[in-house]
Length: 165
Image 1 (tube, rainbow, N blue to C red):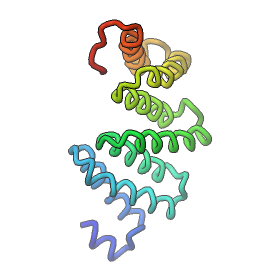
Image 2 (cartoon, rainbow, N blue to C red):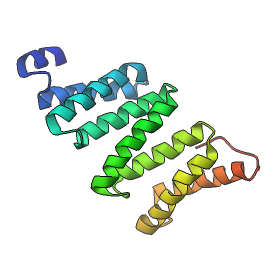
Image 3 (cartoon, rainbow, N blue to C red):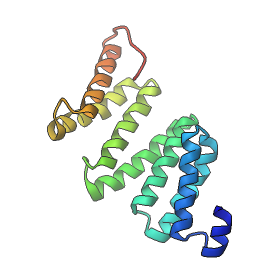
């Protein structure tokens, strides 16, 4: 359906881009990160041309491409991609926008998954402080980050580490 629509409307038509995004997300949700990655990269480029490189669609596509890279074991590239998107989001929407919070958490969790507990702690502790201040300690995400920090502290203190959440 995407190819005929692209021929009729143009490959960078908003409706066609929306269909391509659905296909990429479907592939990602199905665990086919290898197929989703080039889709998200192409979408990031297309949305950058159509809506601007700082548009929500372009940034989301870049972040999803970085997440795919993380799932494929390309951690250095994934972290660089997430940091690049976070820098833009912070400059536009601040540190506590929904997207910024999600990116900060993803960066911390990716670092933790790579065994970089101290680096993860350095990312997640300020996130936790911000979440406590804005949403309170009983918020679901605040509690999730607090639990992750507790696991990291055990690991850093030489306690018996548990598997990461």
